[in-house]
Image (cartoon, rainbow, N blue to C red; front, top):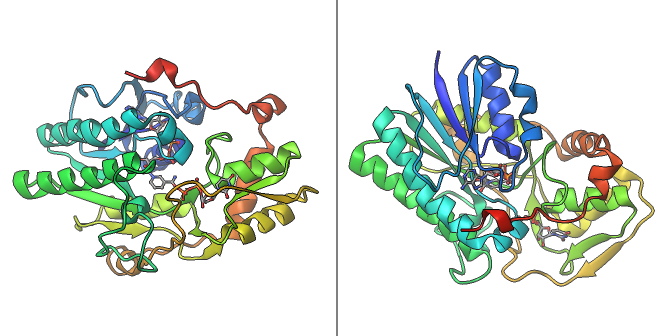
Length: 327
Ligand code: NAD
Ligand code: UDP
């Protein structure tokens, strides 16, 4: 039986990856310090004999007994609100956390896939973004802590590949959504749905002309699964190229939820990328992958999930208390 370590297991993407690898017959070791994740995302797996969970901060030395065939490194705050609140943790998990996991992969002779992001392209000057674009990133801006952590993560991963011959994979994930996103993580989809469900106006930042391209989680997981098992070590974009402005997207949410609320405009956060769309030619060619779930279907499934949350969960507006985690 193949054994895989998944960091960030209690988070949105990590928990879906745990589900997928369990379903594929792997022995899955989930690891998370719960800083932005929640055990409820994986509690259904605790009954599985092929699943175990380590409550551990990967910026500290990582020890896993026994053999490991694969590592998926997904631990990292991922929403702009989270990484603004815990900037040092974000840098540490991208830098020291990645270093620890690369070291572990080397000792175990495991193949490691790291979760990079479209943020490595910054506020992109070429459009759609291809993997050979070097990006336009403000190192000292508010998003720099995340973007540069991820760029360093790619650099050290490539160094382990070239210097130590480690088997590495790098996925550049574009905005992905679905059930188990944290309602209050500030990302636009939970933000808009939460507002609609609570009967609040939808907050569009700036004039809403900035664009994003949203990928449903099942498509993302399929792309990651294929990349892990491919023999390709350079970065691959995984995302859905269907691009929309944030204003048009807010209008879609108003229709989807049937809310009577309106759009209100708030200032655009500094360095908010104005456009984002993945070029997925590489994923098509190398992995035979492309996104399949359209926004209408993906958003319907996501809305069902948020609607099923209890009124108490829905009313919770406070962000996670990060104070206990900062060191
Ligand atoms: P998330 O916040 O739901 O999950 C991240 C998980 O990592 C959380 O469970 C958190 O507790 C855990 N974590 C953070 N720091 C840790 C540490 N030091 N030690 C152990 N665990 C730690 O976010 P997500 O959307 O699931 O993102 C997962 C990964 O995918 C991240 O690396 C993120 O950068 C990347 N990514 C996500 C998207 C997206 O659209 N969802 C886009 C690009 C990249
Ligand atoms: N956004 C918005 N209203 C919100 C939350 C986000 O208009 O309540 C915008 C944000 O400014 C950005 C886009 O939605 O242009 C996507 O934001 P998100 O935080 O989801 O992810 P990003 O792609 O910026 O990391």
